[in-house]
Structure formats: C-alpha cells, structure tokens
Length: 358
Image 1 (cartoon, rainbow, N blue to C red):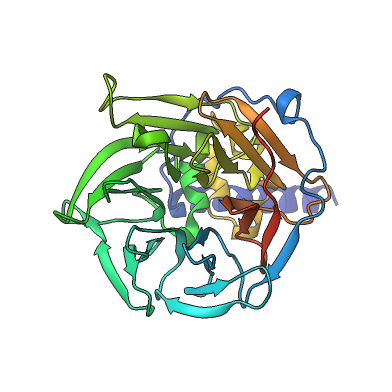
Image 2: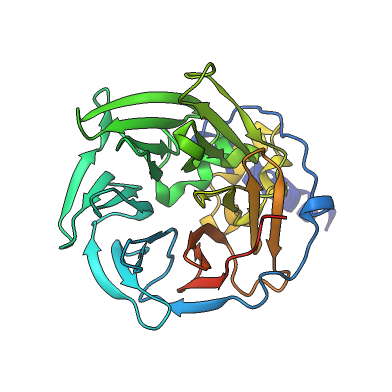
C-alpha cells in the first residue's frame, strides 16, 4: 500500500510540475512587477449605499451597451457586443442605426451631428446620419491601433481618444491586467489635417476620456491603477500631465463631463483582485492560461458610479449592493437623466440626474 501511495504521489507531482512548466511556456503574457496603489475600499466617501437601487432600464437587442451618446435631437445611441449601434429613447425599443463589424465602445456626436465611435477592433470611426461608416484612423506610425476604447471632442473639432493596450485586444483584455506592462496611450486626432498625435503613453489600460471646462485639459482613466490622469492642453502647464484623482476603490472605465461642474466615472468592478498579485509575476503567468471565467474571478462586479468635481473631489457616490444594474461601464448625463451602460447587461439604465451642486 505504501509503495502504491508513493507511486501515486510521484505521478501527481509529475503532473503538477508538467502543468506548471507548460503554463509558463504557453502563457501569452510577460508579467511585470508593479506596485498596487493604496486602496481605501468601500469606506469614507466611498461607503456602500443604495443610490442605484431603483434604476429604470431600456431593453437592448444584444449584450453590452458599453457607452451611451446623447444626440442634439434627444435620441440615445449605444454600441453592442455583436457590432451593431442602436438608437433608442426612454419610451421604447432600441432600433438598428449602423454596424461597425467590430466592437463599438465609447462614442460621442461631433458638431455636425456625426457619431464618432471608438471601436475596439476597427479604430476611430465616423458615422453619418444615414448610418454610413467611415474610418478616420486605425493606425499610428504604421502600426495598427490595438484597442481603441473611448473618445471625446473639443470645441475646435480635435478628437481625443484612448488606445487601451498595445499588447492585447478587446476579447482578451484581462491579460493586460495580468501582464501589467502599461502600454495604454492617449491620442489627439485632427479631422482638418487628418493627423494623429501621441499625448501620453505608458498608461495602465487607458480607458475613459473626457475634456474639462473650456477644453483646458483632457482626462484619461487608468483602469489598472484606479486613477485618472490629466493632460493639460492650455495655460502654463500645457503639454504636461498630472494626476487628477487617485486611490479609487474600483476600476474606472468611462468618464463623462456634464459641461458644467461634474465628471461622472463608472466603475464596473472593485480593484482588490489583480492588486493582490501585483508582486507575483509567476502566479499571474499561471493564471493567464486558465479559462476566461477563472480569470474574471479576480474582478468583483459592483454597481458603482462616482461624481467628481473639477477640483477632483467626490461629490456623488452611487451604489447598489444588490447589483441590480451592475458592471457599469459608463454614466452619461443627458437632459435630466443619467444614463448607464454596462458590458454585462442586456439593457441601458436610467435614473434622475443627481444634484452635485451643494
């Protein structure tokens, strides 16, 4: 019996060693050691509450209305997992507007009422009122843009957009967090000259983009570090960057400015998971070969939206512990409503626009 147990133990050890070696060699990531920022958790100004407990919804024909754009005519637009962009209002069913043949994410209307779309696979797109799709830019310095994520437009027509990662695409975006190589970028594109300019690089998953008052600066969310960076466009600090707000307990996704005093930041998950293995590259390499559902276990879904004023102070904290409308990726002010998008829902969310002026 002892001999049999020893043989079984030896065989099991050999299997484990073989799997570890295979995982190390097969892993698609080259993990980098990084230091996780302080995480305040759901305490203080981030304390749990039920402000999102009664979100109304509008059904979508497919999964994942990631971002929502508000047109001058009062219609709302959103891109879905299957590549279609739909038009809807708070009264009824969404209808097809266009197809990008990719994965439309962030979007906003320009001054001519064309819809400018950040498509994860197709690049920066322009869609006219008839739903005709035009590619504005899909490469930089001869290399394909890997993961175009969000977009905003200045009064002079300049389009600011993020490229989340130079390493991984939308369908395997979790690998970017497990690798930690920080290859996200922020760009400016001029429709007049059809030129593209790199503003920031070295970002840990460059995500939401929003211009500030008078287009003095542009903000970009660094999802992997739970913070928002600011790149100055005007004034004595023009051409430099600083941190607008940091030490967020969640993973900031999209960010939208209300045109007055408040930036709305959506956070689909809490930060705790990947932060815990920031200093463990070998473990992250092993996890990277596991099925996607196992990788996602490191991201704890929440219902979480923050309002932040122009001084970088929290002025609204909206949550729902029951996760009614969850994994929120965008919060867009439109009229008297705050519209919510989510990668995990088959609907768009709506609630009265909270008062952030005290």
